Length: 157
Image (cartoon, rainbow, N blue to C red; front, side, top):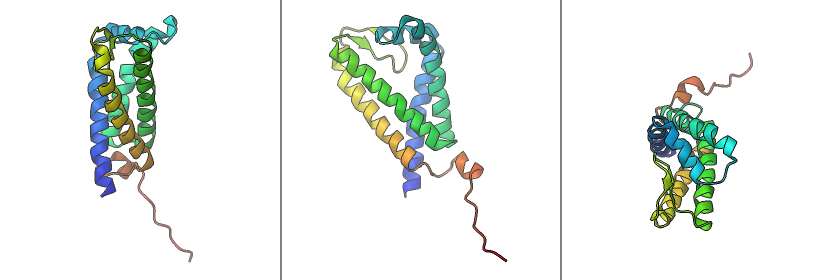
């Protein structure tokens, strides 16, 4: 049963990463603006992070959907969700009202604070799913099952 649960979680979390990254990779200037809106990173890091982050999201998503190096992809996914939750909490505490930029867009949004609890809850659920996959990476229909088949231990002569 655990392998079926892991399959569903892989597809959900991986699908979210692919959609989020693909929407941003098509609009790199908007992605950079979304990173800038958080007012956390030094200005010389905003552009590289804004341009690289969507690519990383798509790669993590593809790895999860394919079940390729699942544990590593799940750990990377969990780490990103921790960073994203911290970023949202940071702007909320500082009274900055921005669209999270999670699925494209970003920048000023006067009604953003009302969305922060939902965004944190969504990311926390996806973080929990990522942690489950890091703990139990084996699942059905996964590239890992082909690439890393358990080998039988044979006895001596």
